[in-house]
Length: 314
Image (cartoon, rainbow, N blue to C red):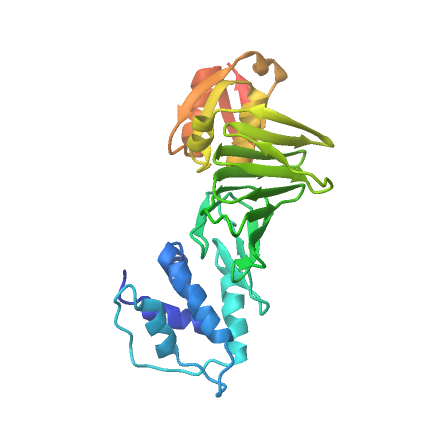
């Protein structure tokens, strides 16, 4: 860890980070231990004290005690104005944003084009997909249950706790588990919960009764219709980082949908290309690499205009 991180944290509190320092601060926040320490620091700010000030030295000591970084002796007072400045600073970081409210509701937003991994206070691991967000009350275990509100899609590895079931409330579905690995996908027309291991109960929000699904099964809701479908867990685990792609006898429509999910780009093509199927496993799939494979496999030339990629048959 860079020994100047304490100076960067102080600048972050003052909302005077340079663009380079914002990047360093955000990289520092990606570490699980750093997130936990930042949450602890935030809790200290919100605790009522006998004096209207807070020592940055004290906060930095708390933040760094696990990473053994010396803290400078410089101290400053943090007023309520500073707290709002911190929130404003976090909003403008051009990566994942960490937003906190005075009601102890934690909200995490992924504004990047790759997955953001967040570890909750109970040990649950969340892979938040691009352009997704989730929120939860702190402490996470509340009234004998753990619950999060999800907007978009995410992959969960829930820490087992039979006394505190874990609920995911997404746009259309409600999912209940105790400890398991599963994916929740919310798209414009389809909502889906896919189970890798363990046990899951899922239902439409409008329903009263849950439906149990087994490993390698998905609960799929399209419109008002629901069904249970089988899937390859190996494929899902391979793809969950949204930078590894697995196409198995995939039509160009399926390829276009997958690339839109991963990169937010659109393919433009003649429907005659659906007669050709794509088979490929692509690890660490940069968009440029994917396009080269598409050109070779489908015998097309790719031309880009903004976020539109035209597939022209050779």
